[in-house]
Every structure is written in structure tokens, then in C-alpha cells.
Length: 123
Image 1 (spheres, one colour):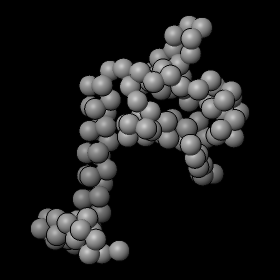
Image 2 (tube, one colour; image 1 turned 120 degrees about the vertical axis):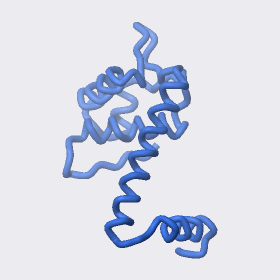
Image 3 (spheres, helix red, strand yellow; image 1 turned 135 degrees about the horizontal axis):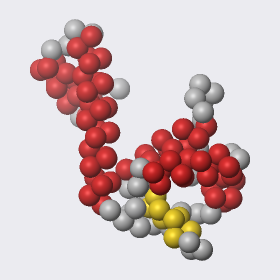
Image 4 (tube, one colour; image 1 turned 180 degrees about the vertical axis):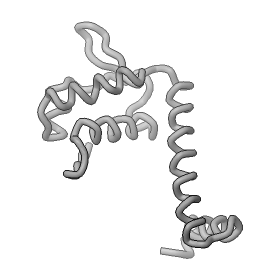
């Protein structure tokens, strides 16, 4: 598991985003047990308290839950995960479309561009 951080935002927020991305992409599967806080903190090279704060945020979002004495688990609610995944995809698509519109691309041109990129015509 590779962790990358930038200096422009708090580390715990970046941890939340990266763990959430792993959940939404399926890298962390619904119901999967997470490593211990100490283990994850060592992997990410962050303070355990920082990781604890990130996991608390994810618990508030109901993407992670704690079972006393057993550990933390990814939510088993696949509908919730799918819905959040869809929200993130829509947000990314809207942001992309706004940028393309600002560059003067029409809808048809954007579609052609995407198809070309997906088919490997543009690199």
C-alpha cells in the first residue's frame, strides 16, 4: 500500500481521502478488517493519533466501523459505498466538463476526445 502526502493540506484529511478512495475503488472490500492503527500508521509513516483522527472521520461517514476488542472494519453496506462512489464520479465528471467548457470544447468534441483517449489514439 503506497501512501503519498502533500504539504498543502492536513495529513489526516489526506488519509481520509486516500482510505475512502481505497474503499470506493474496491481495494478495501466491504466487511474487510483493517490492519491495526499502529500497523497502518507505520505503513503510512504517520503518527498513530493522526491515523486515529482519519479513521474517526470515516466512522462518522459510516464507511468504517469499530467492533470492540476485534478491530475496525470497512462498512458492509454495499449500497452506501456504491452511492458514495457514484457521487464522487459525478463530481469528478462535472469538474472535468466545466474545465472542458472553459477551454471552449463542445459536448461532441469532449465525447470524441474521451473515446480517442480510451482507444489509445492520444497519449
